[in-house]
Length: 206
Image (cartoon, rainbow, N blue to C red):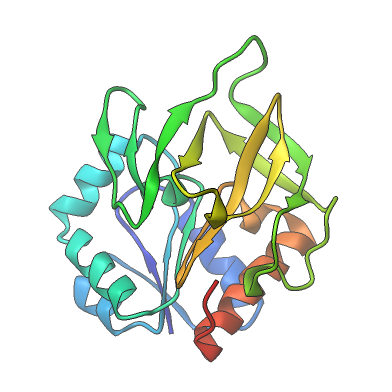
């Protein structure tokens, strides 16, 4: 069973329906015990970083998230959920994240359209079980105003070019993040979610 964490922010139902479409048993929950018992965990999210961390703290979910990650259970952050994996963010001030992957989340800077919205192709940086069946040049759907800057570039699995390199997928051990929206990215997005489901079933890491 995969637990999709409900902390009051995000496109929960579309993520839930996408996983159900590929045959996954999922539950949307804010109950720490249900999250603790799951075989894999998904942290979706749309909104502000600081509000998200405050909601997770209020619901008592931060210790449980760190616990399941330490146990080696596959964990996937989507969109804001990927950003929350990192150490800190500068969105509306400085905020501390889950620090599951060392690095910082920063605003796009430049004279171009922000937020980054639309279909962009993927560049693949390294092999990963999360990328099975995904090819360089595949298009996925992005909606975001911030990007992650990992301390260790070795966690970068895929990205795109939008006036510079934009990290799109990260992975370290059993922790994965997808910046774009796989649930809105047609075949490629469903392939990524299927790969995560297979990782949950097999216990494979990045």
